[in-house]
Image (cartoon, rainbow, N blue to C red):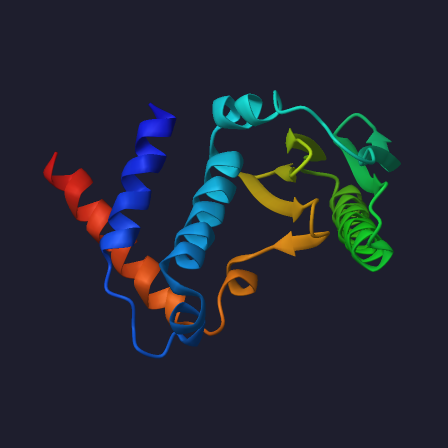
Length: 207
């Protein structure tokens, strides 16, 4: 079902008129445009479907091994307060600048999360009421010779529950972080994809 959905999305993207301002389309032709669309759909599939990600992991691994390990863990275990924050760390990328920047980001974000939790806990303890918990960690969405996708989650529970999800997808062949802006020359893609999302939404509403 997921593969049929991705193929349908690809066909619909290909039918969308390309604005005149996309210089890279003029220079490289439809083949490169199709490849860019495929990468967008690949990233979307990896980040949204465990089944799709599991299928990609069956591709034989070639070259160096990239590992994701728990670098540090912040924990609090008290009667009314609990924290379990795992900090991921990437190892094995040849692009050390990318590896270091991601690891520094993960450490900084989780350290900030822990410090905010401690401040909130101290305030609640002074008031003698309330409870709070935070659970943050990571999961490998897929890891092949081409793609490494790391999902990071944070669940905060106090008066209400809040869940946050973030993803980093790395092109292991080119050693770059895959983002939508990195796939296009300018911001014209925003309007194209937005219109396609609106079209998909209208179709779903009519079903």
